[in-house]
Amino acid sequence: MSPSPSRLLVPVLLVSILAPGPARSQEHPQAFVGARILPIVGEPIEDGVLVVHRGRIQSVGPRASVSIPGDAERHDVSGRVLMPGLVDTHSHVAGPAGADGSDPMQPECRVLDAINVRDAGIQKAQAGGITTANLMPGSGHLLSGQTVYVKYKDGRTVDELLIRDTDGKIAGGMKMANGTNSQRDPPFPGTRGKSAAIARTRLTAAQEYGRKLETNANSPDKAPERDLGKEALLEVLNGDRVVHHHTHRHDDILTVLRLQEEFGFRVVLQHVSEAWKVADEIAAAKAPCSVIVIDSPGGKLEAADLDWKTGAVLEQAGVLVGFHTDDPITDSRLFLRSAGLAVRAGMTRDGALYGMTMAGARMLDLEDRIGSLESGKDADFIVLSGDPLAVSTQVLETWIEGVKVFDRTNPEDALFANGGYGASRPQTFTWCCHEDSWGDE
Image (cartoon, rainbow, N blue to C red; front, top):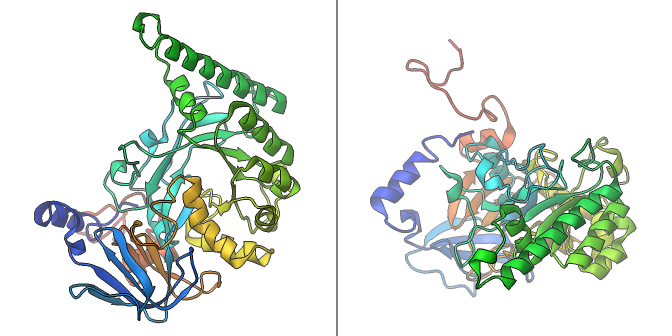
């Protein structure tokens, strides 16, 4: 749903008219005082203080040791819990679409070109405390395109949500998949063996393309014709773009690790329903795992052995464990529940909270910016009504780079959090004589 004028147009006008740089509201520091702070790296801080300024964390610590600037705007968050914004390493919010049915591997496709920032899913993700996400195309291909890492801001265009590296390059990975999703009629593979063979053939062709480019770097007339797909695969092979690989069954997981060892690309294993069966092999490959936690029966046969204990088994094996929603498979508003269910099945509390924040940041190569509450990092954090693992806890506020994007006391935001009429419409239609009408008299 498009952010209403009160959430979008007014802030934009204020920025454009009153402040040439950061939002005017960030001209002065903001101090959040009295909460129990979970910095993720380090011990919990009782009666803590978080000071943010111009989109960054200035300081964090106990009230007795943090100096609050005299011109700071104070927020009393006594009795609340404050922690970093959640990181969703695998989501389909905002309708990101990549490859079509013409080929099983289409690395030239970018979900950047297929994201609707007016999608109501963004506001719902804010309501769930998610501040950063990896938006991915689907898994019906062996390779369905380039993913994009975003901040869930209230933006008018996708460019306002994009995360960029220090060189200005748009941050993102590459989505690959195996198992049954990508098995269908030619030109798609019909078996697991053929799936791996196609992926191996395309990666080998990209290696050869790279060698020809290097050999003919000083002879442009002899260089191969530009190939956008092979260029993108070279980014994978060079380690510049992480592969986010959909995989469920234990044998499919091992196939991914086999390809990773052969071609040397960096990989994050996504879903990993049967990872608990091959945890030692995953640990030996040093492959991070982003786990989906499903709390209801059903789904595909290859996920039949999905188990809540996956996070615990992987943690005990020494694997970096994160979580994701795969939204709309699980609801972004309920993301914290994933950590709670993982702890119920044996994962440590610290490990689960790390998995919701810092582990995801590391999987997206963003650990220097997000995932923990530390001085100098982006001011992405959430204010909770209670313990993050308690089923009764609610996300009260979500802040991204020092700007509040969700406030449960705001009726419009509460609608996204709780659901109801209008919470999922792509836009609001208003007639001249009706406040808000779709045929209502």
